[in-house]
Image (tube, one colour):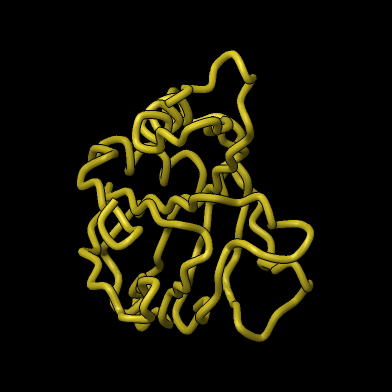
Length: 181
């Protein structure tokens, strides 16, 4: 993973993105997003939760298991996807996805962009040296990055931005599964 950030273009097809948007925009009851400290002035968006996405969970888990071959550790399965909606003026300021008691086990964060017919709402990530990494914004792209990296979504200027977010943890494997070198 270059700079601890990987972009996988067209992880979802245009049809898959449109299906997810069509199905879940109206089906989910979205609520005002909160952080580990509750309502936070650094974030304004709405979220809902999706347990299973027609095999997308397995595709993403398989991809991550092959991408993160860490001696003595194993990537765990995904939890529910966070379906995130940012309307005009909504944003999520600089933050990390790891920290505190609740989020200490997060190792990798994933964002799947579901649409690109909006302005503003730019997804930005800083690398470990705090340099802004340019991210190609496109529906269907998957962004994978270490959960400790700072990232944000700038305020949406027009339209509505939709994404799927998830987090992966790693756990120690059974000693029999570990590679001894």
